[in-house]
Image (cartoon, rainbow, N blue to C red; front, top):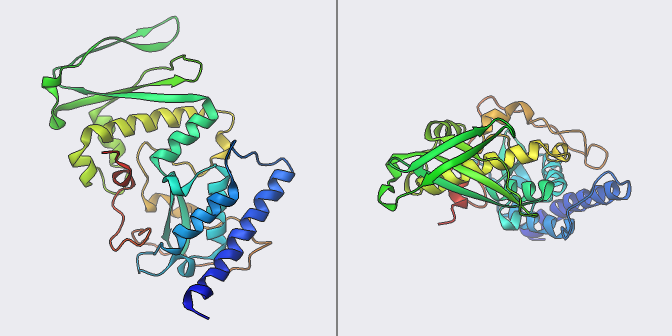
Amino acid sequence: MSENQVAVKPQKEITDSVLAKVNKLQENKALVLPQNYVAGNALQSAALILAETVDNNKRPVLESCSKESIANALLDMVKMGLEPSKKQCYFVAFGGKLQLMTSYFGKLAIAKRVSDLADVKAFVVYDGDEFETEFDKDTLEMKISSYKPNVKNVDLTKITGAFAVPIFKDGTKGDVVYMSIGQIKNSWNQGYAKGNSGAHKNFTDEMCKKTIITRVCKMLINSSDDGDLVDTYQGAEEETTPREHQKDLTASKEFEEVIDTTATEVVEDLPKPIQEGATEPVQQTLSDDCPI
């Protein structure tokens, strides 16, 4: 029997157990999946990705991570209706545990699902642009009273802030959300690369837009009735660091009844995650998602 055949067997056992759990939850009406979301297809895509994902020691995560943590990461993926093949989520390993991380695309997909969001329009404000806001005391909303951008002001080193407006399927618009460049950079500091990735430096405007859009998504998700279904959603505007998840690394008891696993001790200094066959630590997820 080849090494690939040996690796496929436990992998199939885990995905089969997750699918069985999902079917059981659906039968008991404890889980409602998004329309057109096929859990089996998403699990198959995840299995292919996991087969090529390694940890910081270049060991396959299917070998280095506990089966229980793998199963729970896959279950979280299905609960949130995320598609790994569309880069809506990704898997990282640290401390012998597999963790599901929600990407920018995943957060946007969740927000659209739970709030009837159609789109989020984001704009970058540069030094010299005319940008004024006003507060409507009757509706308790912040509105833009004047915005006149000038292409001559476009300079990545002179961004003063960014704002976004959510647009819903019925055509209505939500509250204007604004972040100063200071707030944006504070958000970036929550990420693994601290805003120093190539994407942040070379496509600063696009990264500013992503950050403000993510804040809009966060507000919509947290205010929805389904917010409890996305319990692994990253609350910050930027991808959080592995260290911030250290307290949550102990796998839940969800799969104790179907998977016999030995708990792996969580080390104090978590290794930098590596994903999908990478040879160096992942510096910043958003850089991989940069649309340019």
